[in-house]
Amino acid sequence: MPAPRPFDAIILGAGGAGLMCAAIAGQRGRRVLVIDHAPEPGRKILISGGGRCNFTNVHTAPDRYLSANPHFARSALARYTPRDFLDLVEKHRIAWHEKTLGQLFCDGSARQIVAMLLEECRAGGVTLGLDAPVRNVTHADALFRVEAGSWTAEAPALVIATGGPSIPKLGATGFAYDLARQFGLKVVEPRPALVPLTLGGDEALFRELSGVAAPVEARCGKAAFREAALFTHKGLSGPAILQVSSYWKRGQAVAIDFLPQAPAGWLREAKRQRPKAKLASVLGEQLPSRLADTLAERIALAAELGNAPDKALDSAEQRLSAWEFQPNGSEGFAKAEVTAGGISTAELSQQTMEAKKLPGLHVIGEAVDVTGWLGGYNFQWAWASGVAAAQAL
Image (cartoon, rainbow, N blue to C red; front, side, top):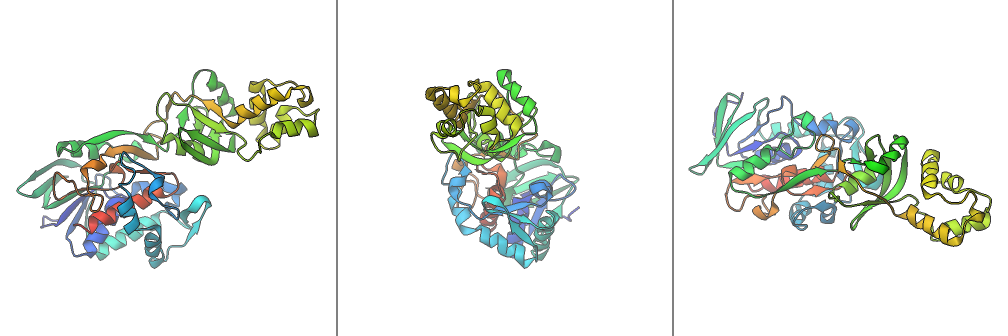
């Protein structure tokens, strides 16, 4: 247990945002205590990116984040960029590579990122209090008092970095929201994001395709993502679906273009060139055969393209370019990579992440109503918001 001593700041949460904030504040000469109920730090980092940690995205920009205030993330993201984090990664000699769509990963293990952050914390003289569930937090006489484990600590600044309730098996809870409400801060209704969607009723027939994936364009409202979709025994998953799930609300349809590269009139052209071909075989040239067969069966077009009127071909083409699914829900926080919603940005300074109503209280990372796209954007928000708060401590 950390010895009772005067601290300048107490950070609740030893995840990406909390460790980053602690390291920077500590290196600025602040006496920092990090408290976490888990026995080890950085649990979400360790499982991210298939164990290789997709630690940032080179295409980071404010328009790739969801929030009730779409401009809130702009300041922090501008002041701490993917290049800044990459400089830190390279300083620690961590080998990395870029995958599709600007995603950066460790060549080795996500443990290297956790080790890097802990080394930066050591350089700042940060005190770590792990395996210490918080029992009580109070504020009086300009001091925050935290009772955790079997001890108590005080500081003039408190940083909430405990994340959201996504992936509860790692110990994630809505603790940040309880604390925010205790101090009079509003919370935007949290919901699972970057999460598989479930299908029921007639669409449950697609479960026979469980395990089949294809490159598609998935759309929900104005959001559109061209990546892979995966059919599961519960519904839809894969990167394209996880992306639109952050925008999806109950009752909305998700439209899938199964052939986003196909030019207009491609089915008429197929009929002209191969009148004896069947729809399933034409689709099977560009899609997995099981998926092609199922789509053709659902469309119920004539056996041979040459026997189908152009109007029917146009109708089939239209359906394939905007096949609507009506999700009846999602797989919830248990399978959500992140949480959308959270502590309202209207309550916070976008420069310092400090609560406007309560000086000394800061909120960073996933606890805030800022949610990034899939592919390293949420880690970049963790680093950037952590740095923004640290520079104000």
